[in-house]
Amino acid sequence: MSVTISSPLTLPCGATLKNRLAKGAMTEGLGDPFNRATGGHVRLRRRWAEGGAGMLLTGNVQVDRSYLERPGNVAIDGVQSNEAIAALREYAKAGTANDTHLWMQISHSGRQTPASVNKEPVGPSGKALDMPGAQFGKPRALTGAEIGDVIARFAHAAAVARDTGFTGVQIHGAHGYLISEFLSPDVNTRTDEWGGTYEQPRLVGLDDMTLHPEKAEVRRESTIAREAYFLEYAKDIRAVVKMPLMVTGGFRTLAGMNAALGSGTMDVVGIARPLRVDPAIPAKLLSGVAKETPAHEKTLRLGPGILGPHSPINLLKALNGRGQQGRFCLQLLRMGEGKDQDPKRGVFSAFRNYAKNEARAAASLQR
Image: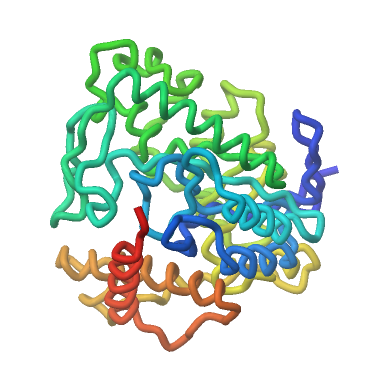
């Protein structure tokens, strides 16, 4: 019998996901000035748990308050206060409702720490991000002792997640954050035991799963290839690892999801942005009421033609991208308040208001 989104999945550890749909990790920005979980996390997670997915991944939970991805992150840094533990337990209770798994994404932002949080971030080396503006400071290379401390921090955060009711953790090793930086030969130029080739870095115990970025632009004319940006990568990974694989990126139709699962290349379908628009879309797909998810990103733009996301003018292209990101982030903040999305929010308005929100959050941080 072919695997579909409705099929349960038993993981190697013995835990069982009730279906093959998972909410992908998305930045949330709902933490308080002490980077603790809040009622916003509880409201948002309960809404998603009731939405029918088998598993929910949290947004970034940082292992060091000095190096956040954005000011509103939750952080598990050192011994947690009674208030912080209680908040995490409420967060986990809401996210595990409806027989849902809730995995905490734990991370260290490394050199991608905004300057509004820390003007001197850290990384494998002193190589700065090649980005316009002054969003990120020049990083300082971590010492060997500090790398050992980072590893201990990940273990500590995972233990706190387990003890407060989260059913698993995801170690964030992508998107240019610290672990990803250590695995990049462009960023990790160290000559000690923490540098060298892909086979040598020992920050995490990973086999060599080096993939080829150029494949991202190769698209077969099929439903699977159009919808799953990273399905080709998954095939490469499947060839060298035995663990269940989750693929997130572009899935929008029920037919595409079931075709990808039925191919045997992957085991779990990750959905992210559509859940910012319709938190109940997993249940609708599972019941057959919906055949596809919302795809609002296709319509979000400053304007038509040259004003769109594919504008030949780099500034306009960047504003479209930042505005789209800002709109989705502001939507999560509204959901944390128990509200639905604001359909009238434009891309430029989102760009401005998101920047203002992040500045306010950075200014309110309590060190």
